[in-house]
Length: 267
Image 1 (tube, helix red, strand yellow):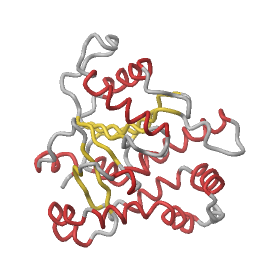
Image 2 (cartoon, helix red, strand yellow):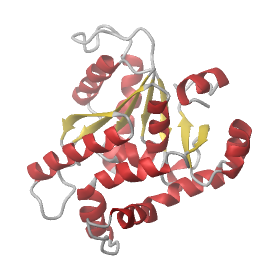
Image 3 (tube, rainbow, N blue to C red):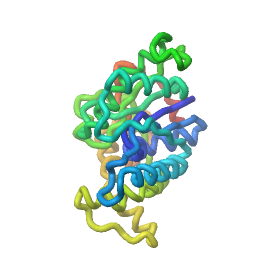
Image 4 (cartoon, helix red, strand yellow):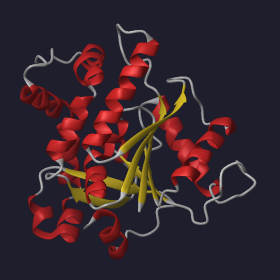
């Protein structure tokens, strides 16, 4: 099967659904991280082009860490809207990737790029099957499922749960993937968010702990919030899990039937 995360920035897939992506890739599925923009504004010292090139290399290395590939549409960061032009660009690329499942941001996310990406993904979904829309790209005969990945508890309120899965086994790989985004984890985010200074580059284990300290809470609250689902669908492993990730439903999600979950997620 083919899985595409449609996210705004180069590191959003790992932050929101890194564990699930790693599990999907390990199960033999083709996983692509597709970002809408290059992330050129995500630095306080480097110029835009240098930042964008650096983030491209980091994103490719991070995706490879999880068994995925990385692509970027190249829209301007913090300056793209859910317009017809951008929708057509996304439709054309998604037809080329032919996904069975698309994972994107929740519509109520804090970042304007995240919200606009979620809107574009939702608007593009049905049109993937309409031949006269973006006719230069071969039409898909079946619409993918569309799911939402949420890494902050506030943005999950009101969203129906589709599936939750333990990611304790994938946790180390996700942290290593996040640490590949060096410009973000150890330069930009500490500066813009007021984090303590990161450990030096010659102490990689301390750096992984640093990343875990800032991004580990999401997995903890998912495990607490959806413990009943974890126990029902994963048994003892779900009951004992410490970190989990969740996917939330949209009108295009379809049922989380056991056969589909086994094929897609190996659960």
